Amino acid sequence: MFTGLIREVAKVKSFVGSTLTIKSRYKANIGDSIAINGACLTVVKVDADGFSVELSPESRKILAIENYKNEVHIEPAMKMGDRLEGHIVQGHIDTIGIVKEIKNNGNSYDVFIEVDKKYMPYIVPKGSITIDGVSLTINDVNANSFRLTIIPHTMKETLFKNYRKGSKVNVETDMFARYMAHIINHQKSTSLSWNEIDAINASF
Image (cartoon, rainbow, N blue to C red; front, side, top):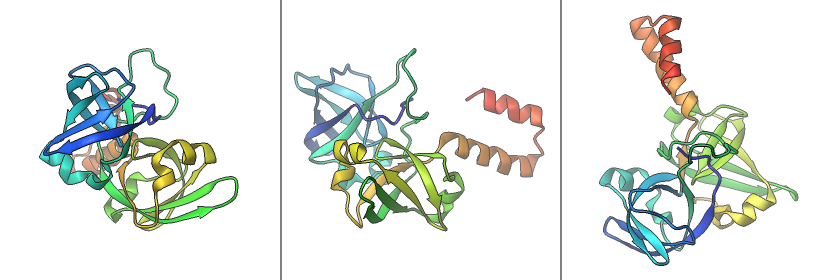
């Protein structure tokens, strides 16, 4: 699990075949889970100045793979007892979003992102969403897009500063919205009781 708070903007040393090698201040261990641009990946090699992770064919298919160059967001997995300052993030990317517009409001930026309509039921006004690993609050929701408001600090300290119209980003929708939608859809076909729904919720 992750929080969606970026711990470092790290450098990409190389991306050859399925192996992504990162230069980072973070001291990783083999087997660690680290979210890179929001995707949970496993450390397979440790170097003096960073680490390497391996991307499966499934990961390469679902991720905005062109962003795994130059700089990337990294966040190590949560440890027991860590403060939960963002929201609960799995590191499981649902889809790729496309930046449609970035509007400078002076003291903030409105960022409009478009996704496939089938993911819109999981995107809730004032709910949480993760964009390239950054935990953010959704302001408005439209038919196939949503609006985020980015403060200047976040714009400066993350890769949002590099985004332009047409940029692709990794999107992870809210875990609880996904689970509840699945439960409700499943209930329609199998008539789950509320006790059964409570039991499913308690297992997450």
